[in-house]
Length: 102
Image (tube, one colour):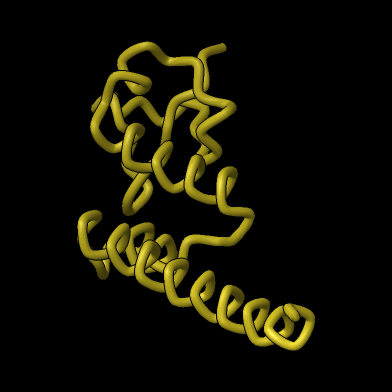
């Protein structure tokens, strides 16, 4: 059985609406070729890649998945939060480093 991508608001990304379909929001489990080519899947994949590369949960994912925030705003929010988190870490490390530099 083919596994479909269930994106925003629980809709199947390829547009099929059979009640016997198997769906998942986990991008790694999707096997439907039409779902894999869909914009909804690619957006979900972006969030998955963000988390994989940064090691942090994207802050806009929940709003996008709930349908309360458009993808572009959710992605930008995730990036802004990550940027702020990284800058705080850089500042802290720089503060710790300065006394060690002669």
